[in-house]
Length: 427
Image (cartoon, rainbow, N blue to C red; front, side, top):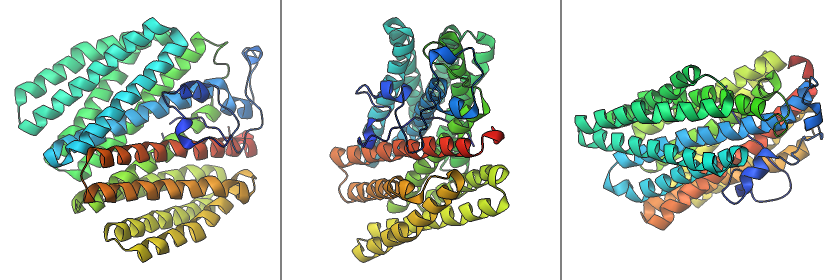
């Protein structure tokens, strides 16, 4: 698995995490989750080795999760933006909406930088990050128009401007040598370029392989960044962001974030009749699920892996049924699919989480059920956009997509803390 997150369980709307409304503060200073045991470290603990339970809930782990989720979201939203751009004029409302979210994601990252290092660092980051988004747009235009000169210029701008500028900024923030950071930043460029190239060639198998690889790579950048910042500012971010427990929390959050976004890639392709893309996205979605199952095997054994895979695969299938019914305007089919999700998946998965963590299934059911609700809302919005291709409907799709993606953090944080709490010896 690969990534990040922190959540709350205070009854607030799921849009509160990692939002530009001050929610980055909440993401760093995480509140209670389903499984919070009040084990967050304090600055007084900085010189004392922490238990796995403390490390998984520490502010250093919160930082790592937040950075990685924002970087993962950046990569996925960039891929959705470039994909819409390459579909041409009919997809312009969707392109505009995802491009706006890509910009907002960058501003959210900038807020995080500003909180840690001040307004000057925030301004520097925003300038570098916004420029690199623009260079990728230029590269995408070059792919769409078969303009080799434009593509070459965009790659040159990314490698000679963005890479050294961002690597220098990260080096300053973390204390890590710029020579260690530069290859990681460069790989982000090459990974994103591979996505755009595959999209332009309509090679969907290659597109989703590249998307998964580039998404996983974001943790290769996010984890050293978080660990370096936490070491530079131990009073603000006590705990060990490099601990096995913290890295497990990051990875589980990333896998769940990827699940949601691969699902919305797949449903969007299905609704719009892009059959080959749907097949490739669905295959990537299934592999993401088996990756999560494999991660459970060392902790709980082969039987747990098999049980998870069965439940998870079935719930993916139920969402396919919901999508097909929604696209056809089949209200009865939608109701039947929701019945399977709420009557089978939610109780089965909640019961599995009870065994994994010791927390009663009844406490898991609301958040598991909310995953169903949010995903259905994404599908409904995608169907509405297909019926009426307006900027307003495109904005709704993008908003629902982000809400659903960010909600996965509630499950990821709670589950990782619960697993570490039950099996501290494994961490």
